[in-house]
Amino acid sequence: MHIKEMAMKWTFLMIVWLLTCLHGSIICLLKKISLIVFSRTGRVYILDMYNPEIYPHDYEARRRIDQKVEVVSGTTTDEYLNKLDKALKDAWEKFKPELVVYNAGTDILNGDPLGRLKISPEGIAMRDEKVFKFARDNCIPIVMLTSGGYMKSSARVIADSIKNLSMKRLIDMSSPL
Image 1 (spheres, rainbow, N blue to C red):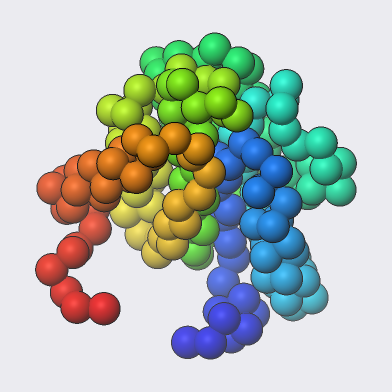
Image 2: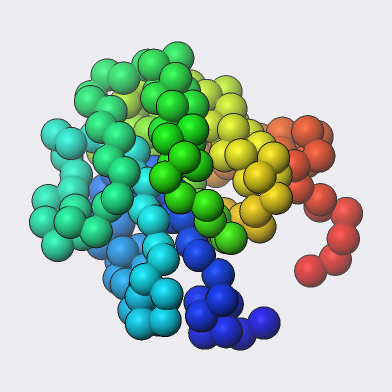
């Protein structure tokens, strides 16, 4: 199905975990999709978990966030995952999407110079697992976009998370692209 056809028929939940200036380009992409969706249905919902000390300074982008979940510098894995659980529950109560576009940034990783959070590699895998379970449990297709992450270790963290999603049968890596 072509993206314009999807946009005319589906409602979208955009889940964003990108904490840096790159987010602006993702919002631009989302704005293009949103323009199509809003012109037909007006049904896009953005859930964004972000560090307000560093993002978003783009106030136009900030206005478009429907559900803001602030995680300040130093936020730990447990605190982060608790906020995520509540955010997903709240999002589902407010909005019933037909597609989840999940921007899975790794700049939340402990030690990342821009994200400033203290999320462990296991915490990132758990975050991804929770989002994928949310989509599966509610029978919603999901698109995962990796982004952010400014350390060499981010690639390994992403790969380990993908393996975890496969082992938990939340994605199927056996079928060819």
